[in-house]
Amino acid sequence: ARRIVETDLAAHPEGRWLDYSTAARLLDCYGIRVADAISVGGSESACEALAWLGLPVALKATGPDLVHKSDVGGVRVNLRSVEEVRQAYREMAERVGPAMTGALVQHMAAEGVEMIVGGVAHETFGPLIMVGMGGVAAELLVDRAFRVPPISRAEAGRMLGELHCAPLLHGYRGRPEVKVEALETHIIGIGRLMDEIPEIAELDLNPVIVTPGGAVAVDVRLRLA
Ligand code: ADP
Ligand code: MG
Image 1 (cartoon, rainbow, N blue to C red):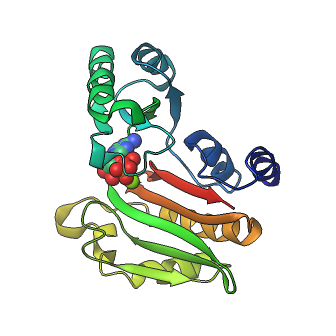
Image 2: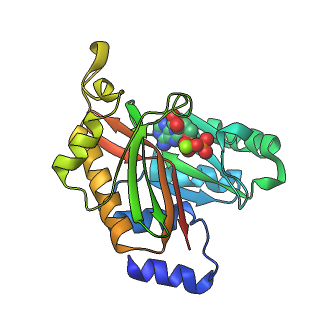
């Protein structure tokens, strides 16, 4: 993890938002699962990526100035054939325009509960870890719990217990119960990462999709400084 951070800061001394694959490698050092994905530069390489990823996939526009991809029509999910991927890429390039310099072809997560796990490094108080409800309503219905790391498994469980959306994790209204331990593992891992790597200025996994089988981050924003 230290080597990944130092290499990136040597190349970009001002710090920067990491690209998905670099961020994923860093998170992997802490056992934090991120969806498998391949960066591509055009519709044909997007189709070739399917040989590695299988179907279905999500397709996401990438570019140095792209942040909220859905807002500009830069996210398509559940693409089920090579032809669908090719067409989705072309339509996306047209919609998003020159801000799109490539795309991420990403393995689809199973259906589950969308949560946010994040961290910020405060200048004087150090790292602070957050977990909350994810998905489209997250900014309207602010539902979050904060802790200073280190975070034990018991503490991660208590954070989740503080959320209004906690029942969603436990089979609310006939939906399947999801694997809460896997979400706790993300919270614990982000706590360790933020504690041990002070160069991480901010970090957001939004969403982490929690399913009956596990938890996986499908969107990662991580800034080094
Ligand atoms: P952004 O936040 O930049 O708009 P995201 O990558 O978070 O884009 O994608 C938006 C939404 O699309 C997610 O909240 C999630 O509901 C869905 N989504 C994105 N990627 C996947 C994936 N790999 N598997 C399942 N759902 C996904
Ligand atoms: Mg997102």
